Picture (tube, rainbow, N blue to C red):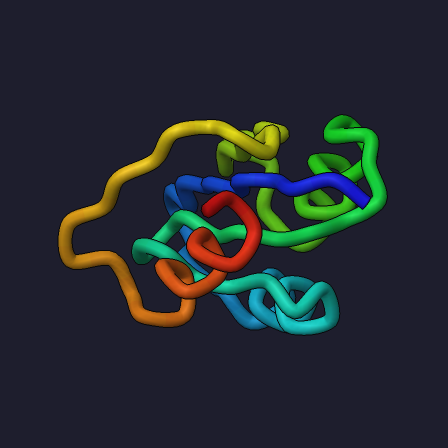
Length: 90
């Protein structure tokens, strides 16, 4: 399984219920308001399509694979997301 950073922008309608339900099934961890981290079986395009299925047509999504050994730094990130980074990308 690979490590992914997932980000989104909801535009006109900001209904998060289906998106949050999907992220919960993946045990994703929130790092920032619209930035999540998850360990998933890719590829990133498939993950993106699953997320798009929970959103409106005008919403935006980015799915980026993280690699072990990547550098990262946060300021005021949410505790669960920071702990996820420490655990997966020390």
